[in-house]
Length: 392
Image (cartoon, rainbow, N blue to C red; front, side, top):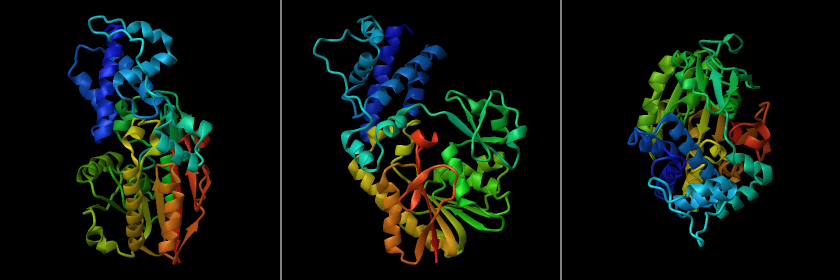
């Protein structure tokens, strides 16, 4: 592909990504993979160059751009060398017209910027949300020890007991250590979530929103496979991915429970008021993960945020029903919005006067409301809110 053709490919992909953001369609990485699957002629350097252009434009544009071309024109304003590639060549973009307007730049759509400001995410804290994230891995304590593990690339040891950091482009999934279950890809902040849960041997631990089970596996490893681990979710496909992952990791997951939305307690009845610790990693806006999925800020609107906060209240109330008296309910979102963090805990405590919040007692993060918040700027992790609640 010529440099101009790469620009045109990026424009076409951005058009697809913008449309998918508006219609809640496929995420950017899936669209990019599908695009190049149909264009086998594009070499690895072409694919990498186009992908970099696409993500540079996504990170640059705050509001949803009118078109992929408008997004690329915004990038031209940042890198004047790109302007000459709008040359009207056979596979390149047409020349830039005198009156063409680039897309608006910024952190996010204006309404969302205001919500971030209300949550004290401004300045460098806001800018850090769109930087490229490194690759963090968790050394699986069931199979390996961090200080003995020989990895193909030099890695930085992080503060969490089994955390290691590598450059963003590292393809750890291709390593033998990954195939053999010695390591799992998991953000440093997510690993601290599992430290906050602090599962103990002999306890019953419920991961109420387990998804594909990344935190479930970490909890099993931390308990040395000597706790009863119960993984629950409403998504059959994602929950189905847990078994092969657990087998690879040598992790013991005692039960996987598929939940029917609105009728969850029917499936959870065997654990009513029995669990020692319940992790509620609630569905959220994902504003703490924009470094990895920057187009997700285009997919969020105020109606969806309101739906998510209602869902967060619902799963918190479910968690309270399966936590034993004196047990711990750990609430987590990968969001930096107070509406999905501190405000949800405040509302929960009003609904449940027999509960109280406890200190998270983790080594990173800062106090936020009745919990703690981790941010990319302050902690070098994805953004998280963590709160520990106990019935009394």
